[in-house]
Image (tube, rainbow, N blue to C red; front, side, top):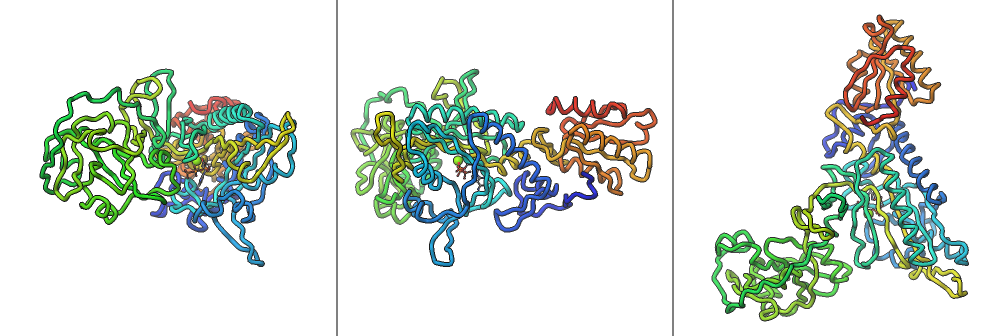
Length: 572
Ligand code: ATP
Ligand code: MG
């Protein structure tokens, strides 16, 4: 393609609202334009990248026996009412009515549609397993659409659904997708990690997220530093190693002490000169049913996802000061579990191993010392409800845990019979009895993957596309467009590269060399062939590698071969 004929509207200035690098660079380099908050037009360069990612995804899905299809974006409310999600999905669901007043939604995901389809079309275990997928726009009215393509309200997702006759079959399908996802992100040239993730309140079902490592990532994961261990988990999910045993210090007499204006762990710690690890932190939450007091050691943080799972509740929110005052009789900062009535108490396992701890006295400006679990208070529930931090031991091998930020580009999930049960989707098994389909769902954010690739591959000058997903692989640039020999040689190399099947742009614009180089760097073509006087005098052109900045002189006649060789070792 000739650059003079392309739509690549590069920008000098980036709109201030673009907070992260991928958003800034995709705007600046002329890949995307905003139509509304979280809704973007993908310009020709972006569309080429999307199609490349999709093709890699498609090949890996097909290799595992996936069949591509296309389901509707517009979905009738009845299906969502049947699964029970019409009410629980909340404001994220884009809802609409047709001219007859019937309710519909724009698909954020497709479990309802596909379960209904399979229920109608598949009768026998002999027709299973099935792996069906599509690549399509998804709609989610996100609370905070931001970061450009990373969190949109309209975005492209590949979603595959597996149908098996039993759990063992699901395990096979799940492992196929795990392998496919690993291949996909490798082939996209991304540095990523599969991590154990949270499966929500239903619990007990396997799920992994695939995280592209990036500083700007919204997700925090912990992973094991130990060689060959491989433990990696979403921070929400990372298990704490249970305390080795109970502190066997003899219990001392429970006493109330005056602690004026000590509302935080830090204030109390410096006032009483004790370690936060000897204190109990009491935090109140409201669920749809009740008020809950969650207890963790003073030096720990509550993991609300674990708490939510332990409680098995539907909603969980931090309780306001009024609630705290009402249930404890004291202002926030002075709450503790001793003599605490009217609320459900959930303690982290570590709290149960403490002896002679300090906690709030449920009285303004007072705390209790020598509080002992069992003797002075008895939780209704004991569970792992705290966040795990860097430096703690790995739950798998005991080595140290490290931390990294990542962008979730894909997730695979064992649904089991969640939807088939709700929607009564059955088949006849080997014994002629009705069995519920055992399902899995597997998503990849295609547009998010493109943005994640930019987060991971850029420098001050612009994007550095991994060769496999670059919009074009090579830019051919004559230094001076007025020099006929340069221009003609560049045009000749361009045509030869096209003939050789290399995706190439030819910068034929009447621009200064500096402008053309800057644009090529900004857009992020992996290679640039520069045709200038100096080289041509010796029958040579420059081959420039965007990632390393390395320049080599190659003979005009050998350019195609040199380019092909460089593309074979893309990310040197
Ligand atoms: P998140 O936790 O980031 O909101 P999710 O867990 O809700 O994502 P899934 O339902 O697992 O997302 O969707 C599958 C994939 O779709 C995600 O792994 C992600 O790559 C992509 N995705 C989800 N929401 C968005 C969005 N708002 N914008 C772009 N991609 C998205
Ligand atoms: Mg997810």
